[in-house]
Image (cartoon, rainbow, N blue to C red; front, side, top):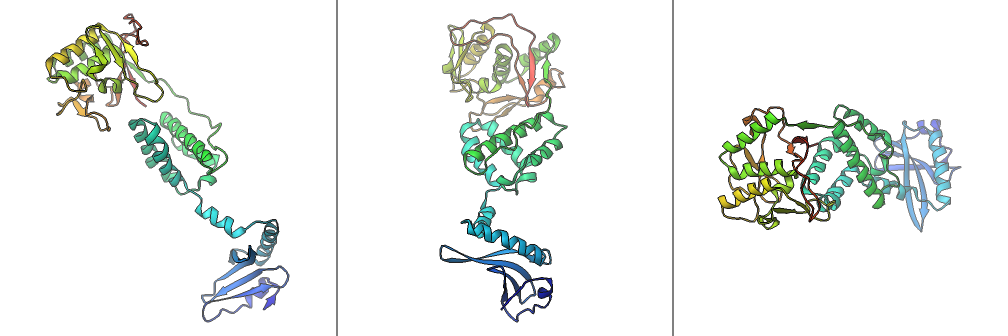
Length: 360
């Protein structure tokens, strides 16, 4: 049965007792209206591709009027004439990866392979708590600049975190381009928030109190780890992952290992007081593989939760012990008491005051 499909003809449709019935338009080839036993009415387009019949649902009535459905049917017929396949394209859109998929692949194929364990864990936390609740269900190809800007705007009170989230999303979008999931990066040219330096300098009096607290601490292995941080300006991860084979106590040289992807070669740091601290640790116990590994940390230390060695980590209580109360748990000791140079370089003991640099 062929009629000119219009609003009037749709009102005259009668629902079948079971199943559905399709009435085709007499002017546009393959265009029709389908009515089910539940009286649901939809506009459809039937066409053939490579010898196979396909049926594309244009939309439902009354959300879509007959005239609007006719206009869309004409456009679809033109697309089919040029070799397109509307149904296949619709299925591809439904099967397109979402931001949830991109996040999972980013962690498994990039972060866990190319980044340090702590950095990968931080990325996972930002995705789980910030990004995916807002963007997780969106198609990767459908994420727009406006979506990223709105997410960043909500984090305006945390500029450091907002910038880290933006950098994470930008990297993910670059990978999506490499994987063929989209063709552009919506994070490009989005301005970052201004970041203020968060240096906390220890005064001479505070440094003296800290050293006094270290001298009184019952676990001198843990205390020596903090002393080495103070005397060398090394990163916390460098100290906690230090091995005895890295130290030449006779020559007073510590050859630090490369703990990050960006540092391709180890560096050497010379400091007589620092090596004295290591020597006292060496004499006070049998030498395990790692210098500052502890089995049962005391109250001022805690075990590392990373996949590496279980090393002593200074906690906030160590700062409380010397009445320095404004230092958070995630502070890292980074005092430039001596300058670290490349292998074979000398040490310069003339340096500014010790300081604390806060982790972001």
